[in-house]
Length: 222
Image (tube, one colour):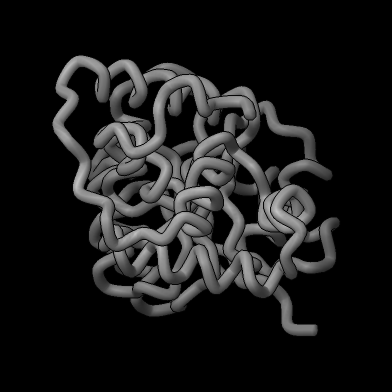
C-alpha cells in the first residue's frame, strides 16, 4: 500500500516538526516537505506533488487561502486541508470556496487526524462534526438572506437525496446504509452531483446547496 504523501504548511517551525513526528507514527503517511508560508507552499507543492497539503491560514509572507486557490488550480489531484486554531473566522469559509476539501482544528486527536486523512483520500470531506455544523449554519443563514429560486432541475430525485444527506455531514457509508444502496453507487451519485453543480468536492456541493436554497436549513442534522 502506497503511503499518503503529505506537505505541511505552517509558519511555526516547532508545530511543523511535531506534526511531522506525529504523522510518522501513523505509518500510512510520508511527510515529503514543509513550508513556512503560502508562497513556499505553492512552490513546494508544484515540485513535490503531494497527495495532501495540511495548510495553516494565517502565515506571514503568503496566506493559506490564496495558496489553497493556486495549489488547487495547478494540481487538481492534490487535496488541501486547512488545519487551524480558528473556529469561527470568515477566512475559513473563503478557504472552502478557494477549493479546500475541508478543515480541522489543531486540537484534533491524533487518531482522528489519521482517520480523517485516510478518509479524504477516499473522497470524504475533512471536517469535524462540530465544525461542519458551524459552517453549514453560517451558509444556511446567508442563503435565507439572499434566497433566489434554485436552478437544480438537472439533479435526479436520488441525487437530491444524496445531496441532502451529504449536507448533513453524512459519510459515504452512512449514505449507503440509509438509502440501502451500494457504496460505489453513492460515489457515482456524488460524481454526478459535482459535475452537474460545477463544483470540485463535497464541501463545495454542500455550500452550494445551502447558499442556493436547494437544501433547506431544516435538513441539517437529519
